[in-house]
Image (cartoon, rainbow, N blue to C red; front, side, top):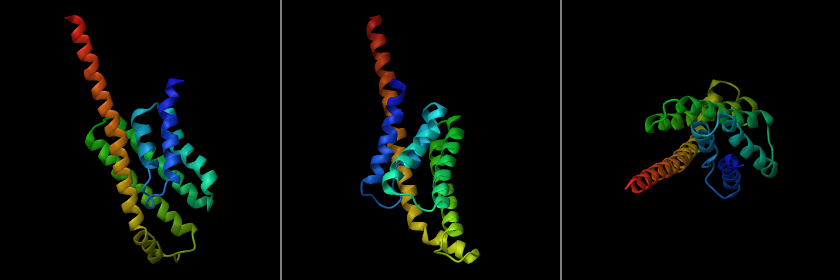
Length: 176
């Protein structure tokens, strides 16, 4: 049961943050996907972002299934990137994973908006216009991912460091 506390809290955070007013795309779902892949058992890595998205989409509302599928795919790719970064966890690998997952999410979702939506002409110029018009959303998504990954990973590492030092201090005190 204790193993479910962190995943449940992360899903709740993801759901709650989708309902709290925020800048478009400045949300923790990508960071939760990356964090889950970096630290939690692999079986939870995919469950976290997909559950948070699906459960909140039930209330927010569903839209074009093709575009929604690309959003979910973007988070699945984020998990995959996190699983690769997990092998050599460092500041550089986590930062690189955050940047790469943000870029891939932008590319995949905006390609889908162009391909399946009606906002843009279905030619190369329309695709480029789709990517150009989405730059403010990419900026917010990147900022949100950097912010929330910093909070989640930084906070988790700080707690690990504190607990490790506290255990060492207690062990040394007991030996005296």
